[in-house]
Every structure is written in structure tokens, then in C-alpha cells.
Figure 1 (cartoon, rainbow, N blue to C red):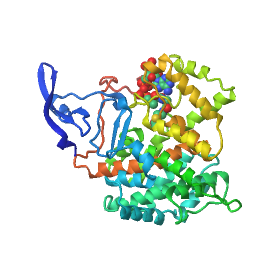
Figure 2 (figure 1 turned 90 degrees about the vertical axis):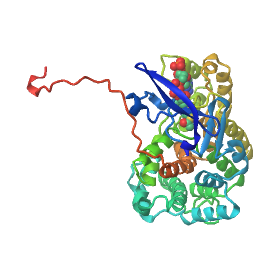
Figure 3 (figure 1 turned 135 degrees about the horizontal axis):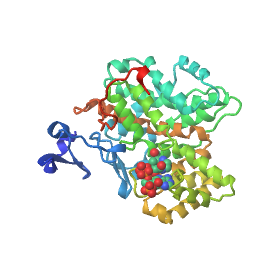
Figure 4 (figure 1 turned 45 degrees about the vertical axis):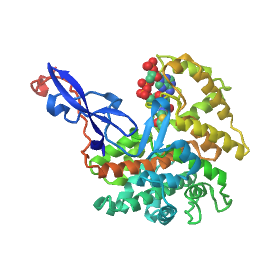
Length: 434
Ligand code: ACO
């Protein structure tokens, strides 16, 4: 609870000749904040912080991120330890419940995930009414929103049913994602199976066919677990803040998550993983010549950005990118395949990391730079990459929604603004307007 972290230190603000004192908060990993919750009431001023570069919207016990040293911890565990030793389901449990599960807790959670894996048959008809080539993100967001009508008990007792609804959502989103893909191919849907793991089930629903059975490969399952763990939470990013903001109006979990999926869709956020592969493919089709792309990225008059580089918070190598880069090599070796895009990506990284433009601006590869190459290797089509991100981020979104709902400091999210439009002026009837 954030109020427990208020210290005796004070920050002073002098405005219009009067000095005010505001409490200083120091978080459990030493992050410093000035508590300005009483600022407007005491001084009449608000703060202006476009893009929320300096604004903490809440206290949170879920994820610690330290961008200048490339640290990312979920509930105190490093991302490196979790990616190396856990399944995605264990990490999902950790995010939702504060602690890693005991064996009994894990078994129970897996049982819930199996129990809720099917989607209502009426939902399957939804797929028939999207236009051909509909974006899988639009389908996912709409379908998740509609779940609120199928499971209305969530609206009545949100926290009482949260474990059940979290498992339901995590399990069903996986099924919806795989069905979206099958429908886009016009192939028969593959139903989930109780004998398969969370990730094994997903791969089977994506790639099994009545005419060509799919064999779940345990190394591919391990790679998918790792990649989903790396995406599972990232504190107050754009989509998570969206889930919290929408949920702060006391909107049900499904509708809040649907809004988060829409936010994730953006090419500056989760949509970047798809854009990276499209950029690497374009370079490959132009004989691998990436110099033009580097030059365009550096040109202040060109809006082009080297996709997969830069991050609002990491001003050092993104720790997730390090792990995924290694996973790329491992997966390609296991599948005894190579990908020319990986070679281009590594060369591009090398050139960018030694270029003054990127060095000065602390632009390093982010999580999206290599994730698409792993997805390609395991057969996920490019237009499903952002859906994969959503699958991974889901436990984080739910954990934040739950934390926000339960927070005694909760208020509806409502930023202020500085009005800079015309001053009050007289109304002019239409016939007198010139
Ligand atoms: N390529 C070239 N230049 C870049 C890039 C890039 N990828 N990213 C930032 N810059 C430059 C900017 O032009 C700016 O230069 P200037 O100071 O000369 O004007 C400087 O670096 C700072 O950039 P900002 O836009 O202020 O950084 P911000 O923190 O607002 O943006 C963002 C972060 C959106 C991720 C940005 O780096 C970007 O657009 N990257 C490409 C898209 C991408 O990979 N997004 C995925 C992010 S990870 C995620 O969401 C999971």
C-alpha cells in the first residue's frame, strides 16, 4: 500500500511567493516520488506531464522495472530466473497471487485452465461475421469484450470470482486466438485437450489438422513458455495503463482487458513485433541492404524509425531482448532451420549499437526486435504476432486490474488539462458569421 512508503522527507515548492511542502515517497526498491495528491487543493496548480513521462499513477506490488540498468522483476523475482526455471502458467499465477504457487496451488490453477478451455459454441458463430482478412487484434478485442455477456457474474462480484475469471480469461483467450487463425485459413477448428499443457494446447489448436496431425514438440513448447513469460508484465505501459484507466470507472474485467488489447495493437506498442518482421523482410527483399534504413532512421526530416529499437523506460539493453536473442538461436538450432532475417537483425543491431545517433539516444533493441523471429520459426504467421503479445501480457493486465480494484486509494482515473483554446466570446447567429 503506497501510504506505507511515505517518508518524513519533504519536497518544497515555492509558487507566487508561498512555499508548500509535499511528502516524499520511497518505494521498496528505492524509487523516489513526490506525493502531490494535495497539490491542486493546496495551491490551485496542477502539473503538466504530456505522455506521463514523470507521473506515477499508482503504487503497485507487481513489477519492478529499472530502465537505466536493464532490470525487470516480477514480484521480486528476476525475469532471467523466471524465464529459465518456470512455465508461463506458474508466472501467471505469481502475477495474480503475489507468490509462486505450491505444487497443489499450481495443480488447481492448471485444472481451472483446463476446465475453462472451451469457448461457448455461440461465440464460434462470431467468427463467421468478420470480413475476410479481418485483423486478429480486432477479432480478439471484440470477442473478449463479448465474454462479459457470457459471464455476467463477474460484473456483480468482481473480486469474489476473480480467480475463476482470471483462469477463464487466460484459457479462453488462448482458444480464441487459435480459432481466429484457423478461421482465417478456412480450416476446421481444433478443440483444446485436457491432456496438453497450456502452451502445448495452443500450438496444437493452431497447427493440428484432421488430415495432418500435429506433434507437439517439447522444445518449441519451452520456447513459447519463455517468450510468453517475458511479455507477462511490464508495469504501467500503455496497454496496462489503459486496462487500469478503463477499469477505474468500475468497468468489468473483460471490457477492461478488451480495451488493453486495443491499446496493444498500436505499432508503437505491441504492434511493433509485426512491424519489425515486415521491416526485416523489406530489407531482405532489397538484397539485405540495411544502410538505407539506418540513414532514414537518423534523418530528422523522415518520420521513419528503426522498429524494435528504443524504449520509453529502458535506456540500456532491454533484458527481455537479451533472453529472446538467445532463444532465437536455440529454437532455430532445435528445428534445424535457419532464417536469413535473423542474420539481418544481428547485423542491423551491430551497426546501430556502434552508431553515434543510437548511442547518444540510448537506443537499444527492445523485446520486439527478436520475438518475431522465434514466432516465425515455430510457424506463427506475422499477422498473429501482436495476438501472441496479448496472450503473454494477459496475466499482467488481470493482475493490475485486480490490484486497482482492491486498492483503498482507488479513484476514477481522470487527468486534468491546461485549456489553451479561445477565451469566452459572444455567440454569433449563423446568418451573421463571416
Ligand atoms: N529509430 C530511430 N530514432 C529513434 C527511435 C527509433 N526506433 N526511437 C527513438 N528515436 C529517437 C527519436 O527520434 C528522438 O530523437 P531526437 O531526440 O533527435 O528527437 C529520441 O530517439 C527520443 O525518442 P522519443 O520518441 O522521445 O522516445 P519515447 O520514449 O517517447 O519513445 C518508443 C519510445 C515509442 C518505443 C520509440 O523508441 C519508438 O518509436 N521505437 C520504435 C517502435 C518500437 O519498437 N516500439 C516497441 C516498444 S517496446 C513495447 O512496446 C513492447
